[in-house]
Length: 214
Image 1 (cartoon, rainbow, N blue to C red):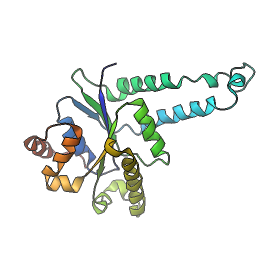
Image 2: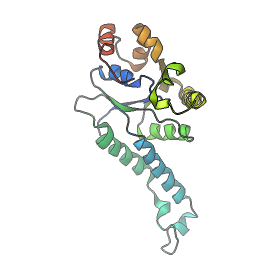
Image 3: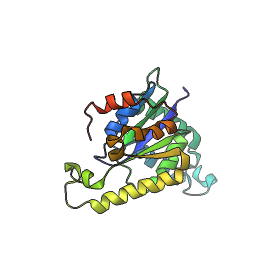
Image 4: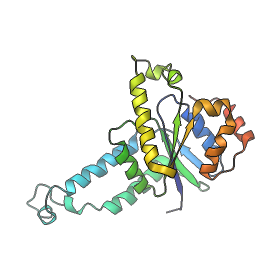
């Protein structure tokens, strides 16, 4: 398996994250895919279900053909993590020959098991980093995506959970704010430094000049 670096964009709907993905993908060797309807979280659910099954009783008992959980004790955890990485790489990320950094952006980081899911992602994708994108809530809530009733508390709660997880990740996470970098692209220089990539303001402005979904 090729030596790749991984980055995942954590955000919520209508935060301007598609533009952020465009900025990342403008870097040579970067391939950050778009949303996958939280498909990877379903793989986490599978993994956790199998782990729980493997703990359904004493190991020797779970290996008996007469046990209702026969075979569950021998769930190959490390192999499952490696196979999951291969599956996501082959079907979701699909890195190209020149890809150095890959990952995806997702807006569905509102699960109650978010800390555990992120910890699992870091096991599946060693060295993974997480880029958090936020935006002024008043502008986010103007979108039809959030238009069904007053969802200000819901949005604030989602952002808080994301930021709490990011805080726990330390240097493996970084936060940018859409309104700030759109108003002044130079504020992204620190993000590029964190990414280990050169900051090219001309390239950044050229990318921003192209319409992206926000």
